[in-house]
Length: 209
Image (cartoon, rainbow, N blue to C red):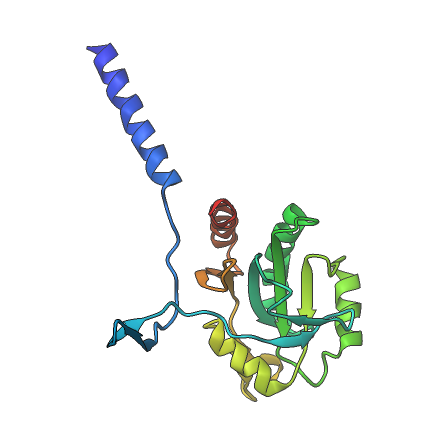
């Protein structure tokens, strides 16, 4: 009887492990309708949301574009260097990910500063030095307000000027996980350790795809 129970428990564990290995991440975002012609017939279909092309300067004044992340997994978030509310918590958690994957050719981090006036390339370079961030894996980005706002919509993240918000900017503490085809595959609370732990597990899933 005990032997039968042990075998049953083992089978349950094996099935659970197999299901975990087969777990896939959803693709997030709006799925626009597109028309295409097949054999002379017009077919209306949906396509997965893909992050649009972009161009920003990083802390080294290097131009960072969609070509920089081509074929790579990356994280995207919004912050500003003088933020004293959620940004320090998010950056502390993201530093864990950076430290784990530093030097990896397959994972990048793109942190966009929403403070387009104050967070110049020089300011971002100071911030990167303060937290020992290197641009081999982690790009601190600056650009025009319109471009930053456009990309916040692309990543499904809040990032905008707001005189009533602390520091003058309303921005999300979430981190978006982007796959090698620039599809959004997950959204995580950057202020929450457990959520970032899950993000690290999901990074491993994407690395295996």
